[in-house]
Length: 121
Length: 416
Image 1 (cartoon, helix red, strand yellow):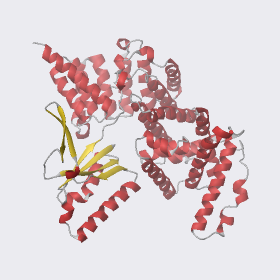
Image 2: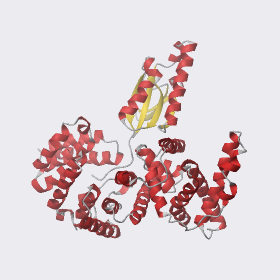
Image 3: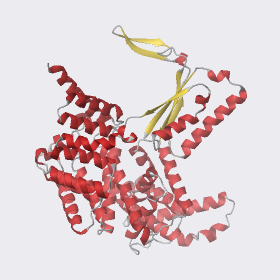
């Protein structure tokens, strides 16, 4: 079963970390990625650039409008994702729980990815 | 170049079997065979298919194996050991073409790849590569994961086999039955993966059904006296026969009752019927035979409303005794509703609804919706269809369920 683990955090939160903390966090990320690669569970994962570099596209008054920045002006932003192919939802949650952002005040949303296959009804 | 592909897939377990028989080291031999397959796909279309494809593959794989052993040794700085560890002459000796029956080798390979120490995804991947002769890229495409992910799964599976000390041999008689069940389960999973995908547009995935049927057929030729294996082959054929009828334009799922039965594959149905009918006369009925028998009853009905539901209900009853399982109960409930009415079917769902895991399963909600609609309760059916649509992670299923919900919602709106 494939899951998307979406990471939410305050943009620029890394800045608030000490050098040591930062090094530790990056080490943690590398080690989780290495584990997931080794276990054959990792499908993909990327960090996203700061939301201030983003654009939001949506219909406004019948016209497609493009605005700077993210759609939602929230404290937390979508900062990156992991895609995994693993045994169960429990395992996906376990992976999310180990992710450093959780400890550092962020959050993670675990969502099943839809499949194009379907059984006879 | 499908002819070359078929030839290669056919030859893979035989070539690998010969190599492992001679050198041990399943891990390294399997890599060498993959390289030989790759070389063949490049060279044969240009240079023509060699007179003895199998001997060609064995020779090339042998050579790759020596190269690998050599570079491994030099990497460890023990070049001198090469002569002893891998006498080149012996490795390069021409293949003993057709000397030993390669059939046993296929069987041994299947037992090894479906070793109980491996997880199901690993068993599947390794079986497809080592026995099926599929390339890692093809398997990755079929399971929609990056090639690197699949390659990692395969090498991990091989490392696991090595660690368990499993050898290339038939399991001892007292384990043989359990080990064969594990092989059948892997073949069943491969089939299912492909079949459920066949409504979509992904050819890589639906190719898995062909591969599963081919491997099961090979195994059936080796063990014609196994009733469950016969049943599994019959089940695959009877199921696959619906392939062209089970989805409409754009991959919309068409339920069994609404399928155009003239589009069912008669050849597959006839073979499946013959196999399961025959097996049931001499074998103790097992889950695959019973599921095949149920599929056979459906296949026998020229029209959906001519289905022999009492017979299907009876078969589900036997199945629920010998292999009780919640999915069986679910299907049984749908069948019972056709014989004794929807209320009787809904009664069977009650214990399932009390199970926490099952209560969140979209199929339970989908069956409940169907039975509630049959029972003349469209309002409750609508809620259940919506719930099922929310719970499923399959896009075609979700679409089907949403259409059902929309149909009932429109009706509710129309009626005064």
